[in-house]
Length: 215
Image (cartoon, rainbow, N blue to C red):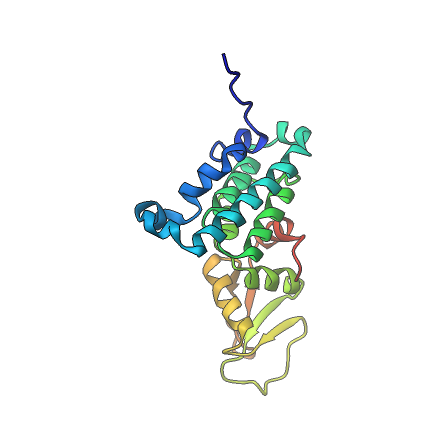
């Protein structure tokens, strides 16, 4: 009788992906739901590139997790969710830069023992939807006290510790995206100073997840 294969560490942790049969899994999932409904889409070169990217991601993540088996045995439910969501997000990610963010998130989540369940939910949404440019903006600028997109008064004097962002710039697009993710929040308006956006309380954990990326 043939001995059944031993589950990989990624399979044990995520409960969703089996790296040893990644070719089958990725063929079904890597192209996204549309590819599953329309098999003809799977014949595209883009689909083949996607399968190759996700397969490599799964191999890399499996190697990372296998190297930290002691930490795996001590995972909290919140850490488990972060790793699980990062792996699932890879199946819908077509950017190599975003896959690198998800690799870093898995590695850093192994060490984040102080994450609360509600924080894990918020962080999972953020790592799923944050773009590489938005992630780099956070890592580079989180030390500022706030962010000001100067819509009407570019000549106004700069405030100490406040990052000024020009409207219509690529940074302004990142600011808009981070607002929608809850990483940036509107500050209290004052009569003698422009409205400033603040980094939310979750940003410290976001940095802990994304800290290894290049800003």
